[in-house]
Length: 545
Ligand code: G6Q
Image 1 (spheres, helix red, strand yellow):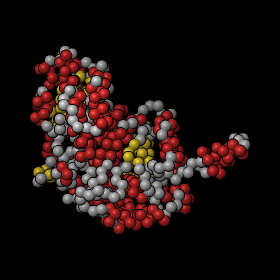
Image 2 (cartoon, rainbow, N blue to C red):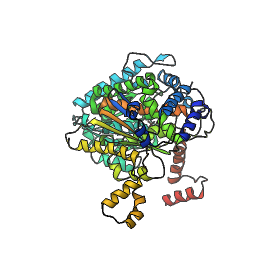
Image 3 (tube, helix red, strand yellow):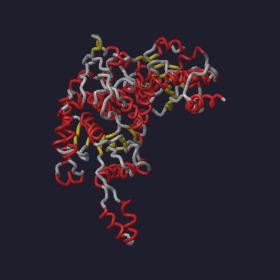
Image 4 (cartoon, rainbow, N blue to C red):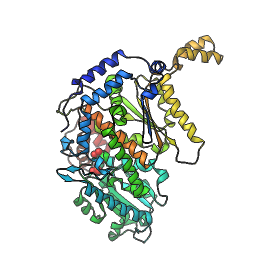
């Protein structure tokens, strides 16, 4: 069982507190004082460069980071997770997305049973099915090959495959178009159905529980559309498959159990892209590509479990995050990929991080008295630079940011890449160095601006700088390195949640809204009114009329 320990009771926590108070040197000063700073604070490992030197840390802080990881017993927590202990206590489950990418031959036990044989069976089933679809052997009801795959799922059953397929666009087959429908707003499905025809479309109904309101409504509407547009009941099996843990629900919907891809209760929704939920990804990039994706993640799993803390990418990402959240009052954390293919990456980890660590109850059931998970947000660079970077540069909150890029690009427009990378590097430099009043004045004088105007305008043109960033550079954005990158963030989230003494793998906070939505729906459909507050009742009545 994960140790129950308040971070505020740890000695390293208190030392970090002190350190944050007395070591206020600016980033610029730190670089000026220590020419070896980059060498000390970066990790180059297996095709990833992780530069964390542009952070408010010195040698003492860095030593305390390691002390914190050690004192909090993070090593044992990682070991417990990866060996199948039931660390998701509030749901009484193991948390084994790492088993889904265990490409080694070692067994992993849950309740005394090795889960690896069933994981391997699932790989085999996915491999066979995806190659049937990719090769065109799988025929639709009029004998034509599948040209469109529509994934119907939401949250963890949507964001993962959607993000990964986006990220790996240069690797995906161009014989098939991929579509994602998540929102219960009919517009989402409607817009996709406009683009596809029944004969050549495969619907993947992805739902762990197979009870999720949005997914079931979308799946039923898709089936109705199929039956109204030339599809027949007997051909549903050729056009609808399911990814779920609920065999009964799948059969009830009318999907052939042969066409159900299963996974297990120890796979959390937001960590399920490695399971059969990744089926669209496998169809898109082929099973071999998917295995590379799994292998990258598996290497990261070994890295987090074994690397010394000072060389451990996810562990350092985690404590840097804690450093800003708890000791520098940073309410949010930006993820800024300088890679258009990663345009869904921040959205993906918005769920990954915020659903995992957005919690105020600790592992002993008490309310915490320190901040836990930050707000995660971000968009790809350079777009963000022309939009919200203003607030990162000159806003009143400190916003630590991860800058992510790939050294090699995956397209032929070669002239673009140096421009993209120049912006990537320049932004981290600008955020750190800023621009002083004196620099602004000199610049304005050189531009021929008079003293009066300089006095008036200069304050707005000053950048304080001293804004911290991590830079993460992949050799290239391919399945292997994407697997590593996602796994690094997953481990970061777990380590942070563990140190914050919260359970990262449940999500009770999303339940209440679901229950209330059912009650309200009943009322909107003419059912008896409940006793709501005046606003809720008025809104229901307004919408009813
Ligand atoms: C993820 C959450 C949540 C879940 C969706 C879909 O960790 O649990 O996002 O994935 O609510 O659930 P189903 O897969 O059961 O439809």
